[in-house]
Image 1: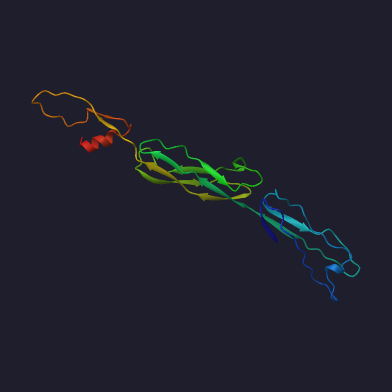
Image 2: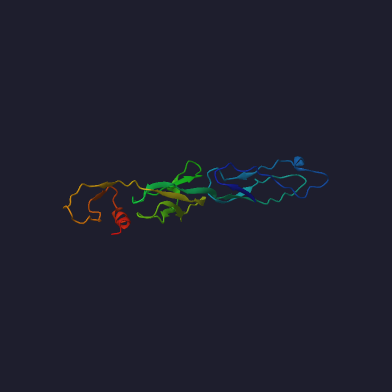
Length: 196
């Protein structure tokens, strides 16, 4: 049996002989056997017969035994694309890049496309979070998954003290009602820092 990955030319086929006598070899046969296999570079994964059309010889009754060409799945990398966002922002749209398609094919030939996800949420802390790909199926490809990373960077926060007034002798207020925060979703953090 011959093994070959998809999208390459057929390997060089060989013939094994058993039964020559008197020092004969294949060069002494009246007809030279030829090898036939109907698999091509674009054939799907599977087994294909390797045969020899019938030949005859004056000194030998020739018995033919077919061989098999086994076309195996080609590796296909399923790569989760790296993404970046700032703390407090919505997650960016996750995406997948493929590497390894053959014969001009693309993801449209997948029987079931893989899915991509991450555990990071809108208010996840600053840091790196894995982006994972799972699932998917293809007739002629073995899917190999490569993890990506969602990097959450620090958000830019502008805190502006607003002008205010108080009456002479009145107590100084300690709340944050006179502060403007430019980053949505971070008001609770500011209040926490202020102890309110």
